[in-house]
Length: 121
Image (cartoon, rainbow, N blue to C red):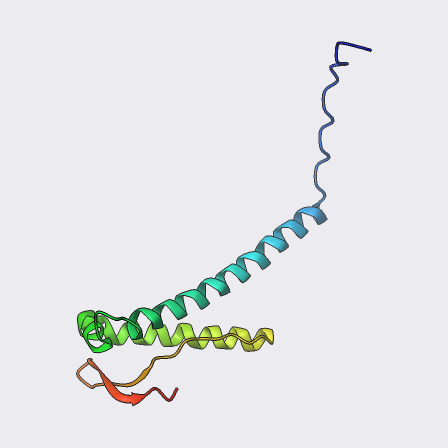
C-alpha cells in the first residue's frame, strides 16, 4: 500500500458556457422576483397588522401620530395592496391580503378619521 499521494493537481472546472451562464442568471432573476413578491405580501400584511391590530393604541391614535404622513402612508399601502393583487392575478395564484378592520375617511384637510363601521373594501 502506497504511503504517498500522487500529488496531481485537481482538475480545473471547465469554464461555463454562455448557455449555462444565461440559465444561472435567469434562475437568479426568477428567484429575485419571487422573493420580492413574497416581501411585498409580508409588508402588506405587517402594515395592516401594525395599524389595525394593536392592543395598546387605537388605529385613530396611530393615524394621528402619523400626522401629515398619514394620507401618504395610506396611499402607498393601498398601492402595495393593489400591486400584490395584480401580480397574483397575472400569475394565476390566490394570495390572502389583509384588509383594514374599520372603514375610514380621508378628510379634505389631510387627516384620516376611523369610522365605527367595518371596512367594506
